[in-house]
Length: 474
Ligand SMILES: [Zn+2]
Image (cartoon, rainbow, N blue to C red; front, side):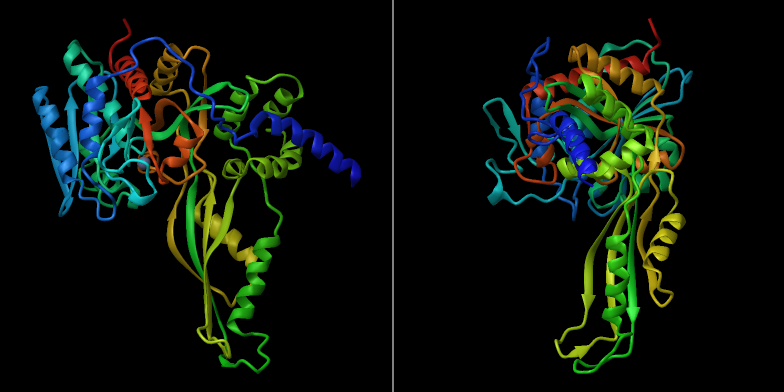
């Protein structure tokens, strides 16, 4: 016991040094890079877009879509606006190519999550610039990347010259509430407008590790989700009675099993890729451990320590299960007839909904419980050998010398990429800036912002990667 603990401590220190500190992503300032640190046009466009409040719900993305349509019109590019619901518009614009290669889709969402102005240093919908930083809800998630994509799209038109494929710019509504009126709606009702072989979307970013190394993590995989309500029923009665089969007791016994079942760790290639990328910036035993976590024995031994020091790694190491809503009874002296729990399960790509539900049923092991699926989507992956993946990596290395390019499995929620991956279309998530830990936390949090230098660099990388993926090799 003691020996095992000692070994864990040593290995924990190994990885702790490697990934801990102030979280996997340190506060170190991004390294300086060549090129202009201001892109006045991108800045002005992003400011204008931030000033349109597209908080979802309700969304109200129409004004934002119309503004982009006006900008495109000024460039001589027509666009189609698709109304999925009152006030909800999706925009599609296309530059024609020769058709040698299937189209490339630049996908972004116009809606944002709510902001609590009292908690912000700058008003979230004012588009204020203070000390070379642009503040606002959506600067990162994801109007900022939307503007980078738009600048890349406009640059193709301004530069002229032949394209080997159509390039489609698509700004959608409703991503933050699941995409029912946005990407999913477009694929269902106007599949021809968004038909493509590759998608550039949100999901990944550049990050600085605690050891100072920078990694450009391109999202190629997302987990699926199974949200399920489990209900126990039983005979109600007075709180003074004995009811071994009361609804609450049944539910508590079942949930206790869920909390004590040993966790199964798994490392899919997309998650391992990021750890290996970090390993290349390390030396000695730290490098060895990180680059050998695909060994199941080492993974089983290291995963608990890794998760303890770095909770944000937990989603990358297998299924996560959280009981999030509990309901039973309304009066202290009455045994309720019903008790329920809502459970949020996130499973790795490759697992089906049936498999996951089956796992839950087997774990709870009570045939009297009933199950209601509230929401379910399978995860998806895209191979890292796609042309866009390659050009994103090349453009990132050119802008940020020494950066390590890697795949990534998103630890958080799903994006619109899931709808495309489910149809066999390759989707890559990347906002090519080096984001600080504070910035990563500000998405869906407070004080979301982007520096003007980040916007300029990210725009440059996007322009370069999109041009390379759209034009013939010289
Ligand atoms: Zn987003």
